[in-house]
Structure formats: structure tokens, C-alpha cells
Image 1 (tube, rainbow, N blue to C red):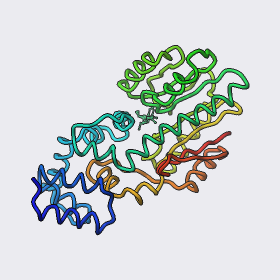
Image 2: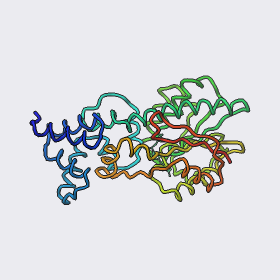
Image 3: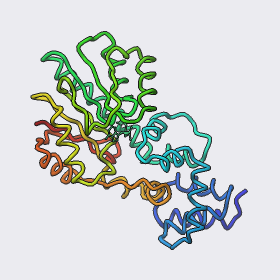
Length: 302
Ligand SMILES: C[S@@+](CC[C@H](N)C(=O)[O-])C[C@H]1O[C@@H](n2cnc3c(N)ncnc32)[C@H](O)[C@@H]1O
């Protein structure tokens, strides 16, 4: 059980730094299990230097007590983590439950929903002119496209997607997800880097969601230039990136992600995203966000 002093210090820390209640729940759960880790976590957040031994102790704790953390340490930006966040099932570890309940976790689920809605709108627009080919670059298992296809296009033969993904396991999962949803006839996978991919037929709609967030602007420009070569005349691209609002509104979650498990994001404003699209030779047409404003989805055309 928590001691009175732990309760007090955690309460005071959360209140003083204006953090959310789910931070309080997390710190209390960690304190119940390991008081020292709770203290190290707070100390690290406050910018007090930790010794190498303490930093390792903290990382070990996160790896051993959080599937999200272990997966991220092994491969930052893996779709294993986004897939875990998309599912709302209860997680056995307090740290993972924290990620799910945090604003950042909810924003990821909201991004998926908003992206799916917009994919549907785009498909409807392009379908007026004939067949629609979607390129889902870095699509992971391609859940977004699969959801939209299974909701609206089960019986359509003129809407097809190719997910270009370098992670074999994500493709295996995606193949099963598509099969289970009954849309495996219209979802194809190519296991390669999208930087090397040359589609036989150019894409009407290109998706680049959850891929650029950790890349500096110059690299994003290079990626978008390559993507733009895959775009059919009159086609469009949907590009997502995490915004500075995430770190402003959910600083403790980002602290865990960056400082403890080593997933550094490069937050980009819509001004920066506009500049990236421009430099890649694309024209910004419009944008939308998830319900928290943590992810910006920009739409561009050639
Ligand atoms: C965070 S996941 C996002 C997956 C999916 N787009 C979504 O929104 O849920 C990023 C994915 O991009 C893939 N990826 C990153 N760079 C890639 C590249 N150059 N070629 C192919 N896949 C790439 C990763 O393997 C990973 O599956």
C-alpha cells in the first residue's frame, strides 16, 4: 500500500506541474510497486541529472512493466505500438493502461477515425471518375484502409489499395486483418521501402500516416518528392504529423516516450507542414486534425 508521504508527494507534484489525473494514477501505481522508481521518474521529469545506473534502472523497469515501452525501445515507430493503441482492450500493466488513457493515446485512436472518415470522402470523390488506386505508404498492417473497405466497399471491384511496408510482421498481420474483414481481394501488400517502390500504375490517393513524425523537415521533403512521383495526374496525398500541441497538453507522456523509451518526435506546425509540401512540389489544399489537435493531416496535390 502507498504510504502517506508518497500520496502527498505524488499529489503535490501532479498539482504543482498542472498534470492530468492519469499521471497521478500512474505514479501511485508505480509507487505501490517500487517507490524508488517513482522518485527517479519525478526527478528525471524535473530535469535533475540521474546517474547511468539510475537511468538503466528506470529503463529496465519500463521494459519489464510495459509492452508499449518494450516494443518502442526495440523499434521506435513500429506499428506494434499504434496497433496496441488502436485497440481499447484493457492492458495488464499500469504503464500501458496509462498510455491508453492519456490524451496522446486517445488522440492516436481519434486520428485513426478521422483518417478513415477522410479516406472514405476521398474515395467517393475519385470514384466519380472511375477506378481508384490507393497507395498506403508505411501503412503497417493497413488497418485504416481495411476498415474503410470493409465498411463501404465490400462489393466494389474498382477500389483497390497497395500497402507498401517494410515490416514483414506488419504485412502478415495486415493480410490476416484483410482476410478476416473479407476485403483481401482489394488489399495488396508490397514488402519494400516506399523510397524504392515503383508502382505499375500510379496512385490516385496516397496515404502517409504516422510515418513522418520523427523525421526532420528536409527528410520529409525528400520522402514527399518520392511519393509525388507515384501520384497519378489529379491525385492527392494525405500526410500526417504530430503537432506541438501534444507536448504542450500532455508533457508527461511525451517525457516518457522521448526521455525514457527513446522515441523522439519532431513536432511540426501547419506552417512547417505547408513549407514541406511546397518544397516537395506539392500544393496544400486543406487539412484536418484528430479531436485533440495532436495530429495534423495535410492534403496535397501535384
Ligand atoms: C507508426 S507505423 C504507422 C502505420 C500506419 N500508417 C498507421 O497509421 O497506423 C509506421 C510504419 O511505417 C513503416 N515505415 C517507415 N519507413 C518506411 C519505409 N521507408 N518503407 C516502408 N515502410 C516504412 C514502419 O515499418 C511502420 O510500420
